[in-house]
Image (cartoon, rainbow, N blue to C red; front, side, top):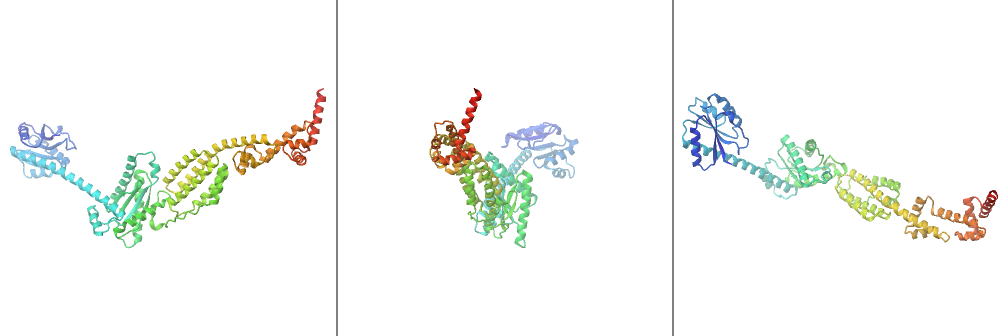
Length: 548
């Protein structure tokens, strides 16, 4: 788009001269004439506003004060030229102080205007180039900062002089000496179902909050980089102190303020790990590793914390802490669907497992995954559908990797148990009912034979102990009680027929000797089989007489 030359004048002579000059210059511009200052519309965008404005002060002689105020407001972005037949003492100086680009006494020659327009055009180009150079320099400095920060935390720079030279290029007056790792709490759960663009915007907002804090504190000696989806590293240059403890206190103070600032600005909590102070920047990668290690202790401390490396103990990789006996008992309870038994043993296991305070988080998660696998196998053994249990196991295994501290894992474990129990009981009840029904059919058919609990359990493909448990839970009677009631009930029917002797009846209902049959019968009915037969026959004869 062509640049605009604006003329505020009362006659056409100056405008006509500009039109002639336009034909002989390499610059493309158009001339616009106004009769009054009231007609000027200010444009902040220099692509659309006039790049040079001529004020004919003889035409605007009663508005000198207005012109001066106008130039003072807009002189940073525009070029103003004052035209006048005669300038009073110090008047030109006054116009220049107010922001004038030039002051020309009329009449003005064509050559003077030609050079003036070229000079104005060149100043526009110089201003644009200067702004571009500043942007390039800013971009270059930002790149230098990022590359320096990464080289420092990974120990890629071995010469102190190079570190100092690159620090100066990055705009630092001191070399960084402490690393701080800032972790956005619950990042993966917060970003669930969110786009990568959204994740990036969250990180950028956190970085912006960090930079604004340091800008507010007038701290320039710092570098900020991203080292993970939820991790941001700040390399600080804390001024030389008398002792190491002072460096620790200063870094903690900065971290506390950063944490508050981030929470206030964007509403997220962060956990911050702090490494030790290293005077030699070539060792800054050690401070970074320490800060990472300190930050990982949020696994035990929970979110929204500040952890200095000096305040923690080294992790232990010892994983033989699980109460295997209790886990085995719980697995067996889960297999038989004993909900209350499972819950009771869960509490015992959790108390032992979560009493660990310096287990390596990776090892801790591996142990919990192993426990999840054990519970899943027990659920399948108890009758849960394998396909559904596998789906549950995969879902919770993925979720475990995203959990950040032990309290979240404790809640996760409760959810796992409830989900597996629900799945187990849903399929377990149906499976149990089918097994018991099949067992009852077998018992009703073979009760006259030598029927044992082991034989029936084998018939329905269950262990004797488990079969005994579910049989009583389903029928309300133990296997022996049910078999005894069934046999005695059949015997009562046969006793009404005088064609059967007590000996024959005992053998017919599964008892090898009449004496044992009589003892069992009497224990259940309070009388011997013979007495029972006589009493039933007398009752039957009496009823017939009454009916006659």
